[in-house]
Every structure is written in structure tokens, then in C-alpha cells.
Length: 315
Ligand SMILES: C[S@@+](CC[C@H](N)C(=O)[O-])C[C@H]1O[C@@H](n2cnc3c(N)ncnc32)[C@H](O)[C@@H]1O
Figure 1 (cartoon, helix red, strand yellow):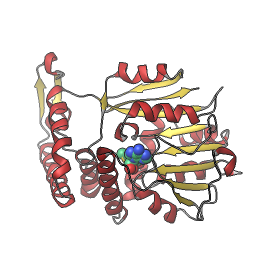
Figure 2 (cartoon, rainbow, N blue to C red; figure 1 turned 180 degrees about the vertical axis):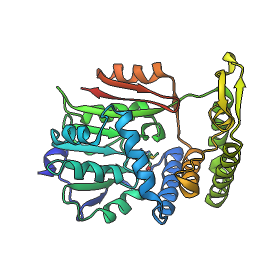
Figure 3 (cartoon, helix red, strand yellow; figure 1 turned 90 degrees about the vertical axis):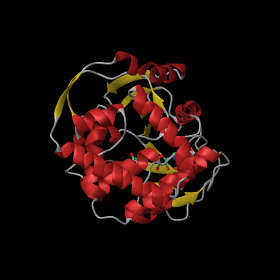
Figure 4 (cartoon, helix red, strand yellow; figure 1 turned 135 degrees about the horizontal axis):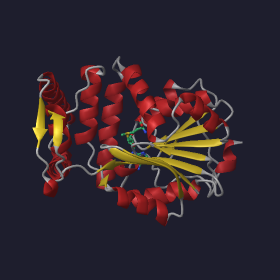
């Protein structure tokens, strides 16, 4: 049955297939390596469930489901679900459990795809592929729901990737849930861009060290419990108002993530994720919307917050 959706017959080894191992594009390969490192290290840690719960709650908000019950109802009406850029696969596993009669396929270009397949091998309706979501083996109009959460901006050319996930989505009602990182204040954008160039020459050891230093900085600033009345600086995109000093520095100058509930390991991982992959494009709302409109999709739900723009789009 699963082969109905592929252009050519695909032979999974149990629940996994390696379609493509590496990218010829330097930035994409660097991004794959960064995420392989992140997920391999993260898989060894103990606090993952807390992070997964936070991510799942955020997902329900980002894509307008509101509750897990609503998400389950939505997924249950879909036969084929594609988790494009599935990382360690916990969201694909979530979808597969919420909708046992659907077939869920996760795909990631990093080594996490293999880890996910191994971890969730007992889930009968769940498959994983290693490869590039910008060039998939799916037939045109084959997938009922594509979830592309926190992924598209890490791909070589997000516009092409978006076109590909639109191609494989079923016409007359197939849906895409996708988000993009939002552009932030100018000093933060400039530093982020500078770092994307720098990181290519840094070792993983250096990047993990820097991530934990950033976590420590975020923690120290947060512990000051200091609120400052910030004057607006529109030309630099700095918003005014009473703000916590850690959040002020975070949004305007430097990603120094710290979340007490998540603790150090998860905070480090979130800082690593930001400064390590060389591909991590950020968007203005209009740029994202124009990508949706150019692909002839209808906006069913749109959400914006300081970190990102997200929504569900119908073909
Ligand atoms: C920030 S993580 C998000 C993972 C997952 N969607 C989640 O929400 O936890 C981005 C993921 O996109 C994957 N990725 C980046 N470019 C890709 C590509 N061209 N094809 C497939 N996966 C890609 C990375 O390997 C990484 O696992």
C-alpha cells in the first residue's frame, strides 16, 4: 500500500531507507552535519521528554489545532502524512500514535533519520527515510498532510523546497503545516549572519562550548530579574517598552537561550541548534506569505509570534 505514493517502488529495510546520504551543496552538507551532531548527542541525554512536551504544545499553537484531541481528529482523516525534516522523529511518532490508521513517513537529511527508525521500529504505521526534502520520491498529489516544522529555512533553497512539498501534497484539500523563523532586530540579524559564516570553521567541541556559555549568559541575565524601560529604536528594529533584560538582549542582540523549566541540557541544545547550521534563513511576514501565494495555496490558518510565522495552507 505504501508504494502507491512513490514514483518508483521503494524497498524499506524494516521501516527505513537511505535515499541520499550527502549533499553536494556545501552549506546543506554543513547543515546536515550540524544536525547529525546535535541529534546524536541529544539522543544520549535524559531530559528529552520535557523538551518534546514543550515542542508538542507549541506545535498545537503554531498550527491552530489548540488541543491534542483536535490534532488527532484532523490526522485521522488523513491517509498519508509526511513529516518533512523529522529530526529525531518524535513528532512523526506522535502523529502515528494519534492516528493509527494513517501511514506516517518522516524524512531527514541528517543521521537522526536512522536513529528515529531504530527507536520507533515497533510502531507499525511509521517509516523513516534519509534524504533531501527538496527532492522527494513521492508522486505528485500523493500526501494528505505535510508537516514541515522548523525545517524549511535550513534547506539549501527554501523556495524550491516549498515548491516540492506543494507538488507532493494532494490537490483539492491536501494541507501543509509550515513555519519559518522571523527576522529580528538588525543587530541580532547581523550577528546571526556573521556567525553562520564563522561556524563553518569551528569544531563541534567549540560550538558546544559556546552553546553552554550562551546558556550560562542567558541564565545569569535572567536571574537578575531586571526589567528595563527600553526606548524604541525603529531604524534598528528595537521595540520599546518594559522588558526583561535577558529577553531584551535575546531578541535584539544575541541568542542566549535559557529556560529554567527546561534546564541546562535542553537550553544548550537550543543554543547549539541556532549557531551551528550554516543554513538558517529568516523571513518577513510578507516574504513567507508570498511563497504561499505563489504556490497557489489558500491560507487556512496563520499565526505570528516574535520567533516565527506559521500556518496551515491548503492546495
Ligand atoms: C530544527 S530541526 C527540526 C526537526 C523537527 N521537525 C522538530 O520539530 O523537532 C531541523 C531539521 O531539518 C533537517 N533538514 C535540514 N535540511 C534538510 C533537507 N534538505 N532535507 C531533509 N531534512 C533537512 C535537519 O537535519 C534537522 O533535523
